[in-house]
Image (tube, rainbow, N blue to C red; front, side, top):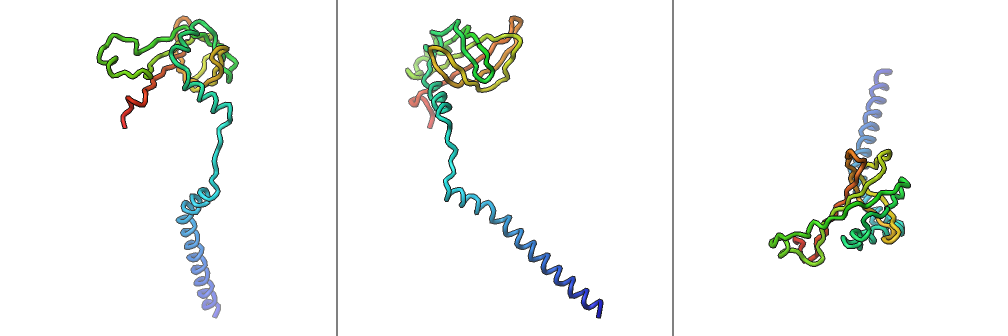
Amino acid sequence: MNSNASVKQAAQSRRRFLSNCSRASLAIALAPMLLSEAQARTRITTARPMWLAAAQHAATQLSYAHFASQVNTSFYVQQYSLNLTLVAAVDLLDTTNAALLANRADKDEMFSLTFVGPANAVLPTGTYSFQQRRMGSFQMFIVPTLTPGGVTYEASFNRISQANQLV
């Protein structure tokens, strides 16, 4: 009789175990669908701070001419409280290559900027918030290069007009 009770108890434990496993499997299978449905219902959005949206917008409005007029001026990197000096602005589309010029739209821009910074503070490759007295605040991606004279940073711009974009 004792063995009969233990068999019955083991059978109930197996049923409970299989039932719990089935529920867990069902929950795992339905979780992605339920989460996406819940997100769609609540429409969770992450708004960009106004200063970030303004800085990103400002960077798209800055052209080669804006930077070229500011060569040998200081640009303040806000995250590191560091000043970089713009030492060169090179228009990469200023060429005598007729084929390149024939396909170029007026709004196409390709230019690079070179900045010099202090040798004792090297910024890693990344996007930084810049501030310049005439150009305002904007974000820019820069890449450091170690040179015998110190640290230089390069920013490259390649803007293709709507007319030249492939669909």
